[in-house]
Amino acid sequence: MLPQRYFLAQAYNNAWANHRLLTACRGLGAAELRVKRTSFFPSIIHTLNHILTVDWFYVSALEGRPMGYAAFEAEIPFQDFSDLEREQRAIDRRLIDHCRQINADELSRIVVIPRANGEQRESTDRLLLHLFQHQIHHRGQVHAMLSGTRVEPPQLDEFFSAGEEALRRADFAELGFSETQIWG
Image 1 (cartoon, one colour):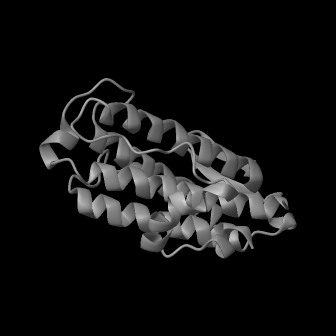
Image 2 (image 1 turned 180 degrees about the horizontal axis):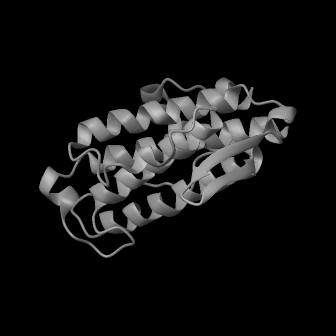
């Protein structure tokens, strides 16, 4: 697989994992989303908002229009789950679109990321790897927090293999994804 195809597949996998997690979280009420739980962030809604705001921070930098710390102006920008879900799906699409246009030269392009003490300069490939790992980390925390609710945590760590297409077919239909879009 060419490196640029790898990052596109990761962007689709990221959106798909977010879809599965958000679909499960949709089964919780507003109060349950805000219940104090043990994790890095104190609630499911807080952690989901963190995933979203970090996406805004890095995707805008990847696109060449860094919003910087404006991404974090509100610690929890969306208390309403439907608004948060809509915005997460939108940023997931932006990340897919960005990864779709990546070529080998773009992977080594330096991205400028505004930081409190100056600018961080990072290659596109390393920034994408960081972003995907960040999302995996915090989705895992939400997954663990869901274990303490009446909603069963969704399967997030399988089903992207070639022989498991049937296991993701319904999710892909909801998302408008196809195997061809991802794998060529």
